[in-house]
Amino acid sequence: MPRSILCVLILALGLRAQDQPPQLIVGAKILAPSGTSWLDGHVVLIQGPRIAAVGPAKEVAVPADAVILEASGLYLIPGLIDLHTHLLLHPYDQVSWNDQVLHDSLEFRVLRAAPAAKSTLEAGFTSIRELGTEGAAFADVGLQRAIRQGVIPGPRVFTATRAIVATGCYGPAGFDPRWRLPKGAEEADGADGVRRAVRRQIAAGADWIKLYGDYRRRPGDPSTPTFSQAELAAAVDEANSAGLPVAVHAVTDEAIRRAVRAGVRTIEHGTGASTATLLAMRDAGVYLVPTLAAGEALARYSGWKPGEKEPARLVAGRALIERALAVHAAIACGSDAGVFTHGENARELELLREYGLSGAETLAAATTVAAQVLRRDDLGVLRPQARADIVLVAGDPLDDVKAFRRPVAVWKNGQLVLDHRGGATAKEAVAFCKQFLGHYSEGRWDRVRSAFQPGALIAASYGDGRQEIVPAEDFLKRVTKAVEEKGLAIKEWISAEPRVLVDGAIITVWAPFTVVAGESTAQGTDVFQLIRTTEGFRIVALTYTNRTVPKAR
Image 1 (cartoon, rainbow, N blue to C red):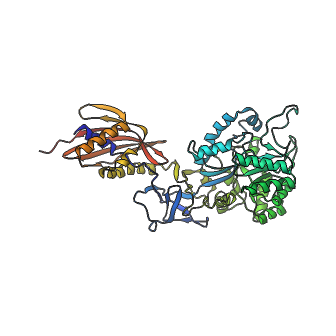
Image 2 (cartoon, one colour):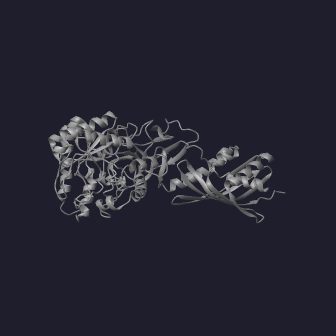
Image 3 (cartoon, helix red, strand yellow):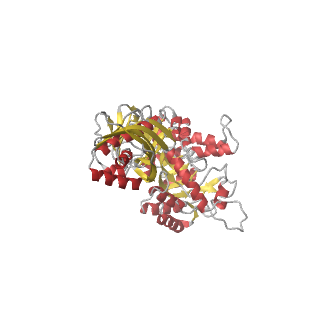
């Protein structure tokens, strides 16, 4: 067979690429709108960054070019939301908070934050609220931008920048007072001073304003209220004027009451909230974000082990949840990840469940309730026009809270960012090859061109012993010209069962083929290596061998 025709055989194995095709998730049990049960026989159609349809398989109109994603045996839930994270911190049992703030450079902390963001996303948390950079200036705004532009993978980030504290009421503390040390948050005093701080942080890119309503005045002291009622009111008024909500760190009952009266949106930690104060929070529409996982992590760092008598910190957290549930206060998921390892955010959900929330309430805390906190009706739900933030988990999370620890696949904005479906991935890789052969036989060269990852190579071994390795782009230009000049009709198909190896991010397919070009017939094997990008599969390397089949006499 002429060499130019053989080249076409290679390209026939390329598939898809251009803009992201529609995706149809089939076979999974899908969380019902009630959030308390599962739908069988339903599918989810993703188009672009949004959900296009959720419904019975027979009733959903599926585009002809949709990619079918098999999810049998898995449970499909909305992307999870963590309302209290610190990407710019890492576990305190590795490096103390003081040392991170005082010793680690801003550049180092940002570089550490990048893999933390990836781990968070791959854990199924597709949105986070970053509640303070802890001395890292406005680095969260830069992280948010890098994630939005695809520079690094990570969840959708809502920023709070530096946070605001009263002078002398935050760390680092306990050092010789002669030295002026950098602080973990911006200090401000008086109503006017607090307003100025709010304005500065909004101008720098804050989506939320975070205030410290109480804190320890000196190392070892108990927390006491810091900002006055007038200062809190001024901060909330200024933030609301710009359309921003306010979160307040508060563990004392008095500080929580002041924050509620000032009109804040969330209380962080809230350990000391009395029943009366929780009732006031409920009536004012203020959400409790208890950060139980951080408290447990700190207890572990102090030597406590599960099974032992719980220290006062854990007893207080358990009692807080009991009081909140008793008065129907709204509880939302916020873990304080950074105190402990990023990517283990689901520990907060495990503790909420252990401390008394039902399975449905626990899931809602990280989906619908958290989305209400963010005032985002397109997050935390599975419905048409919602953001296609989706997680497949192994196990029923309404029954088994540990299922949150077992994400199998994760979508953010319609992009498949984690896929551990194994056999399903192999089936899709084979379907990729077969589907493209149809496009190739129809002469759809735009699909061929877009199938290769930039920099891809093609290695060819011909029946007469010739071999070559060339960039796919150069090869394609040569092939396209040759095919157009000869005007040949070419049909190719996979002629035997392919073999597939899924090895991490690389999928290798061995595909025996038969091709008919004019009066010539050839057979051989294509071996191509794929990666799954946000636009679908891409070929990174392709090797083929072939031989011409003699004509029958």
